[in-house]
Amino acid sequence: MINQYMDTFRLFEVDIFRSLYETVDMMFTAMAVSLILGLILGFVLFITGSQGIFKNKAVYFVVSGLINITRSIPFILFIIVIIPLNRVILGTGFGVNASKIPLSFIGIATFSRFTEKDLLDVDKSIYETSYALGSNTLQYFIYFLLREARSGLVLSFTSTSISLLSYSTVMGIIGGGGLGYLAISEGYYNFNYKLMWIIIVMMILIVQFIQTTGNVVAKKIDKR
Amino acid sequence: MFQTVSTFVIIDLTFSKLGEVMIKLEHISKKFTINGKETKIIEDISLQVEKGDIFGLVGETGSGKSTILRLMNGFMAPDEGNIFLMGEKLDEKTKYRLVKDTSMIFQDFNLLGNLNVLDNVLLPTRLRRGSKKDNLDKAKNLLSFVGLSNFEESYIRNLSGGEKQRVAIARTLMTSPKVVFCDEPTSALDHKMSYEILKLLKEINDKFDTTIVLVSHDISVIKSLCNRVAILEKGKVRDIISLDTKDLMPLSYREALLYD
Image: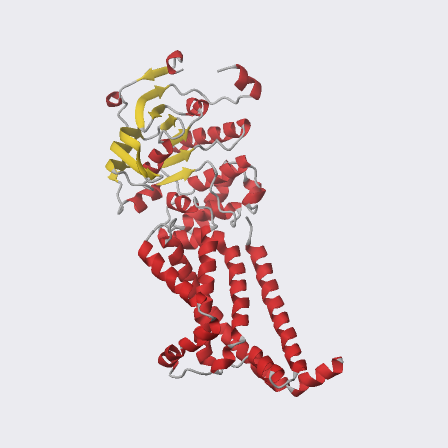
């Protein structure tokens, strides 16, 4: 039986590795964008929120609202409704590169919420401590808040990355390709269930790898 | 209680000794909104702290003593009145510069758990310019001064309460502050540890002529350390008292229980 799976793997080897590359390509860009913009938006939510140092209901309402809207539209529909935006940014609505746009949006929305929560989990007195020791607002973010929240942020980023992997499987509808699309188009629709199962196992291994790496890093940097 | 202690001398503010004024509060008032209701926490307080003073603020919980400390270092702004820190008026523009010449010791130590002892002590220097080598030497010397030379690489979670507070004191001294604010520095510590910390504060005052403002609800802490004390009641200064400071004596539990 194992031989049958090996034969299927060999038969689709080129497709599998091409799809894996597409998945990694989409994921990598979306992860990088989510990390930077998600962190920034998370900070904005944190500082303008009800316990924030620059409490601002209007800014919080707008940012929080946009994040909620992004997260509440079923992702497959979200991909479709932002096709015009893909065209504006990239000149095309379809393909692997266009797929990076909706993936990045959902990544930013997910990670910014996680970031807000992680920052809220940090001891509230840290702002006063930073001020009393002579820090300005930027130094408070870098030397105090980020340092104390770092292991939580790593775990949050891990969860965001796994969500992105899951979201990336439906990018086929705008020609994004990837492992998930191969499993559905070739494996399921073409009755090639062995290929489908090979890809499912690959996805499980990727998720295990991401989660284990996240856990190890988070544990290593958590000295509290 | 105050009237029975012969060493207390009640004096008027205007007759206080003429030293360099480090902190001056002029008719300070502060309101907070608690449960949707505006409550006056500080009401028309005027006082001054001079260079080299160990100035105590005592009062019941809710008397406003911790608020005064946070007004003095500029963390909070008063609703009315002026505050002068080292001769300059505290406001939104000056506070970040002025606070750099002060430091604070907290009841719960407020150390960063993700940094080791040495990095916690070095933290204030990362917020300022200066030579890394000099800072490292100074941090090591200060850790030796507070008796924690062997703990440089330790993380905060592995320290006792007294050790944590000593790290906080070393961190405070790192920038050679002119004024150190202490908010209930011994409340989370047992009797023996409290004595060690108070002894250290006294030493700092003697050795570096650092002005110390100490908030405590524990009258024995104030009595053993402060040369001037403001007694607060419901947001107002009821009295300002000068004390004859004695040498800080170690107290065993037995002594503490049996003698005043």
